[in-house]
Image 1 (spheres, helix red, strand yellow):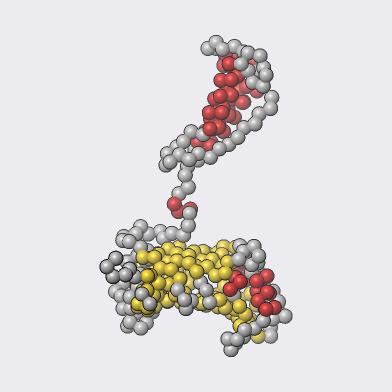
Image 2 (cartoon, rainbow, N blue to C red):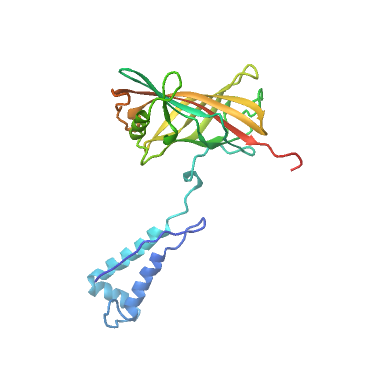
Length: 293
């Protein structure tokens, strides 16, 4: 007997649903008693038929069990939880979250060493968002309490925006850029992506011109490989500019290429070291509502 069983996911709206596979299984049994399966002759329909066929047909009990178990397995699938759909804080918001998005003035810089000297590459565009609770400083001198801050966010840099630089800041070469893109597997993984998972305020500034010091944790994806990282971050509220409340977030993070399964390649025509320093200034802002709206 040839069987073709299909498994279907169930959208249950928050409860436990019933899989179509379960209905298919019961239909198979019903058709067996009504008129047979796959062209068999009409069979017994008296109340003792199930016992009868379990005795005389060796495969029948297995068919029933497999079909009903398959249906039950599908029906146990539940809707995906919210935590699997994107970056989130492990704190329950105590107030409305403020959404900040990228502004001009951002940059990310990669720095490394080779046998013949240093190399560096820089991008002037960091895209993404940051959503923060009321204990995140948005104004210079804002009073905040040290501890965990309600925050979630994502920042990304397109690898093609990285350009090689000389020490004096002038452009290096197309060849250097192409080597960098190949090393970072840009064809298959065109972005470097960081997803924030935790933000803790460690130190408030002594005056309005000094930054707030945070410890940040999150997941960093480079060349298709994701690693959990932690680093100190400085947050400097810049006040209102062009109708925005702007904040600059800065840090330096030490990484190893081997963490992301990248073999130190020849960039300056010689082998580079494994260590890489990532520096960034990320400017984000909130557009203020116009008066009277």
